[in-house]
Image 1: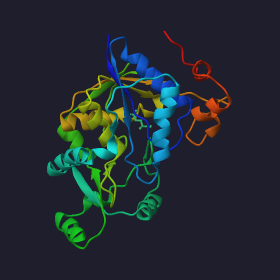
Image 2 (image 1 turned 30 degrees about the horizontal axis):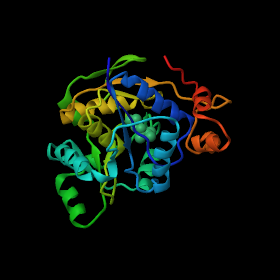
Image 3 (image 1 turned 90 degrees about the horizontal axis):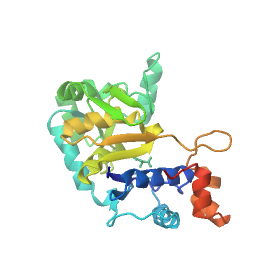
Image 4 (image 1 turned 180 degrees about the horizontal axis):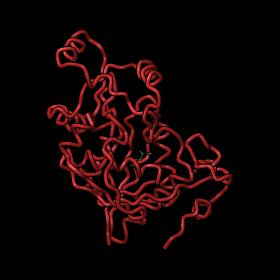
Length: 281
Ligand code: GLU
């Protein structure tokens, strides 16, 4: 079966063996006659660097991958994500959050046993309880704020949902897994990964989302956002992560296994493929 798949790296470090695996996996999953897309997820302005973006093209090309042009760079499409966010805000599914990181931390410390989500402790919901008048007063006073999803309202509107991963099976969506997540950051006209990823998978016509197993929990939230935004549900396949010799999962800081380091050491793409444990069917 042919699929439309994508590899969607964030240019916040050098690509490593795990990225090579993910890119080959996505390419292969597209099947003969399928389409393989590359998307640059460069919305995190604090961490993105142009040299990392340039290296993505260079490294993937060296690995022998070919992708469709034009490549979608998220930083060039901010109004599209903003429109999706505005739609959720207009429906009363988001609220402005004025908390600083320090305030959230202090609040969590006050609560014994704050619930944990996949990315750490869940936001305690402080600003969810503000009155409309208080929100307006704070905004009028120029207080910076971010937008959070009101998960309870969102779940009530979306109704029960599920998703199926090709490897892990079918799950009932737990809408509150991440709590009231941030959908846009303070002061920066950018939206969070969870929102931009579902918007782009839909508008690029991605039929099969492939990525590492670390992002499987994110499907609970992605499925909810897709339902709220009326977006089609893609198929999903989360693959195992590549680990290093000591069994530790690779991270961007592990420059030793960066594709460019391996290339400089004289490895060829076939050797990198072997090292990543990627097998052609
Ligand atoms: N940009 C994300 C990352 O580099 C991947 C997102 C995805 O594949 O959905 O981790």
